[in-house]
Length: 299
Length: 292
Image 1 (tube, rainbow over the protein chains, first blue to last red):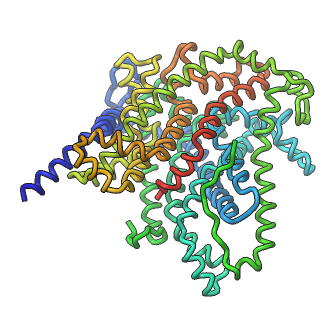
Image 2 (cartoon, rainbow over the protein chains, first blue to last red):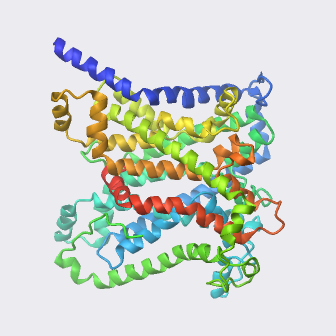
Image 3 (spheres, rainbow over the protein chains, first blue to last red):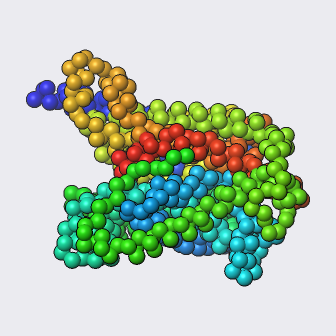
């Protein structure tokens, strides 16, 4: 009895010893900032002078602030188009590549390649591509006799230009889907095939449920990433033209570090946090019926 | 760059094989077209970086430069202080990768190997921090770091990496959990301490997972724009993304297109190199840890 007890005590001791870096980091770099931004969100605060408590004023201002609603609309529109299309493309590429086909390795590397250019380098490249006078995009459209719009310089098209750009990195999702597809047992597919199931049925009833955890993971991470778009707006459009790419985080950054309204921005931060948690919770809940985890238990 | 080899295609049964031809041809064509579209911007990125200022303004864009303006690659170092930017980014990324690897491997080992009290609770908490958007915590972090006099130093960009990152801990923990118990029992019988088992048994067996984490950490730090924009104010401390972002600012009447492309190409070099070196491990790491 005492041997078991001391063994479990030993395990607990070493566990805490090893995870202590994260525990300390969690307290300093996550928990403390979350709580203090909650406090700041109820204050008038410019970072230099001490915060002054003003109750819910920041939140009520937000709901009457035009730029806030603009940023919500821009971010949601971007997210609801870009994330599903990226997922479909990633899955589509992965399915195409998950068969014996010539040049497989080449295709896979080529499709993943754009994902390595992400960040500012990618924004600069597409800044040129979308230039209406000298850029590649309108030149390619002209092959089909289409006279392209001014893309980033036109308030009606700027956001769609950024959505098109985001599809360029669908290859990074493809890699994860390919890894997922590899985990689908060949025996299951063969059995279904012997039973006379067609390709489409096999995909729908075996492949898709088996890779549903990968799908779920990518959906959630994709949403979270796309709620936080900043680089493109900062480098390519500065939120414009006419606030057509005024993303949520760009709005947050501007009001905190250009207008020095850290209290108001903290309220924005908390709304973002709550929205992300809500989306994640709803998706997890809805997915419970559809997502398959090995061992049969749906967590 | 050699090709990636990871997934084993399914061997189609005879029944499938007979009617597979048209599907294969269609797949191949679709792949060919998308790959062409995906690679075209990259091709133009490189070719444009070698065009002269004047040729850049031509429409339609030429596929290959008429005269090779290798000078662009020299100019960027003068116009942008590119050498300084590059050096700063490399220093920050280097420390970040080291910090992330060290701390994440320790923490992940703790979660994977010891069924101590509270293991599940902390692990679920860790997973939920993956959802925590950085913008939601950046203001108090900024206040904290300015109180510590860390503004305009590299410290805010490096130090947090030494406290582990949730995604990488998760990835490594999945990997460590697959290591056979017997190895550690053997180590213990030989009188091996816990930290030594981590270093001499767990780490050497985890090369693919560690390489994957190193690549993720490098790309994250190398591409990060928001954090350095917040913390770095003097231009000799700027990182590559911060300096590059200034190329589209309104201080240029006409954007220096050729330099934009040179900068993008050069920014890509370390990442491509890293992939070329570690890609076998990287793909293996993704497959073995299985994002599930």
